Image 1 (cartoon, rainbow, N blue to C red):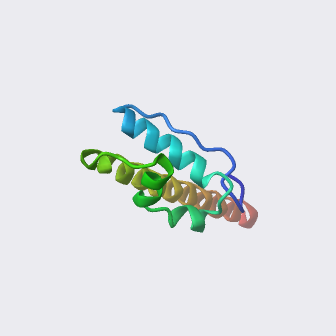
Image 2: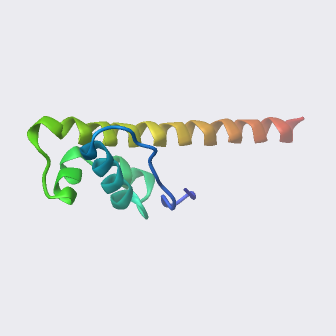
Length: 92
């Protein structure tokens, strides 16, 4: 991920075939998007990309979207920590 767009994304997924399919579809959909665009992705977008999901597997799409949000949050937290650390080193 560079400052502008998501370049490389993958998933280490365990679960049912629908969970794996949702993770793969999510990676395809957000590759090349900026973080704001990626955060706009909804579970319905994954369902459309996959041509539908059984009603009892909608949770798989929600989990994939939630995991993306958590990954972006972690990325931003790490960038902030690096920026703070770099600022402290310059002041020293």
